[in-house]
Length: 443
Image 1 (cartoon, rainbow, N blue to C red):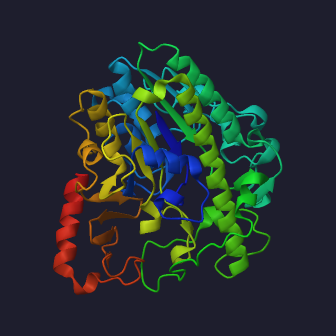
Image 2: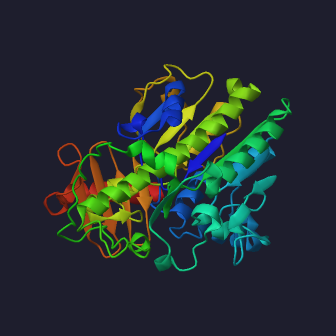
């Protein structure tokens, strides 16, 4: 079972954010292995999910999977099977609920519900997106309470908290449908299943039932580390996705009280998403299938909450790429021991194959994490990522960012974990070495 959570940075108690209320994911960590240094391969939803679901590096655009779909129609011999398709070919029933690929429900068209425009052909036996009061998947994607749909972002509040049950926001309905599908799938014990569930929050706008916001009443959040805009050329951006919402004339880079409110509403959304995970895992336990089900929980990229004066994703700093990854396997050794090995999203596909006995495809660019599940101190490898303007590689010590215009950023994490001091100009030999390694890995 694959649990995808949108825009979730490692803002969880089990990943070091002790002020966050995330009891269900934290309990999951105790049953498996948390990868504390997991990095996505792209700092936005579409290309990051492309890598997860195909096992290969891909285009940096958000419509990466739709581009793959078009290629599949024109030149199918050039397109390798997706992860769900691969498991489907190996006898699994494949079902997705919610936002698993870039569009919730996996369809295109004006409202993302056109059955003739499929984001991942041949992948799912069922790909479901309950919409309820939000009318269509596009409405649910940026939905607020009681069916409010984003028409113009500037007229939609950046954050919101409303009294009510979990179903006053879209994720409550996604979870209900996931529980329904889980019941159907586990009723056929002789048929293996691949169930993927995509929770939308904490994606913008930050809306969650008030009971989750109330969890942070009186809770002290730590100061934002390195809240200054970089003084030299970097992967910094203007946070345009965030800034286009109604902010009541406030800017979190200038208003500390407002910045704190933003962070508390993000935290509320994390706790809301955590509650949905808890409901799904409880259903799995009730069916008895938890005893032989592999569970992967994955955040699709990081999210800056003021670090480097960025509010959002789309950057190649540490915060834009660092996200939670948890794997639970019934035969895992040393349960609850976290791994500090550097790993990347592209590793998930071969790992699931390795754990289930399904042949690892030769085209996979990742490495199986099974050895780390056996011994949590096993070393990892380098992690690469990209956006439309630059590429990056992360080693145990360094992050190199190579921009299309020929400029470089190099940060030494052993002495500069906040990525403040660009030392590229003073370390040209190391820059060249890491750049060569980066290009080789993405080849």
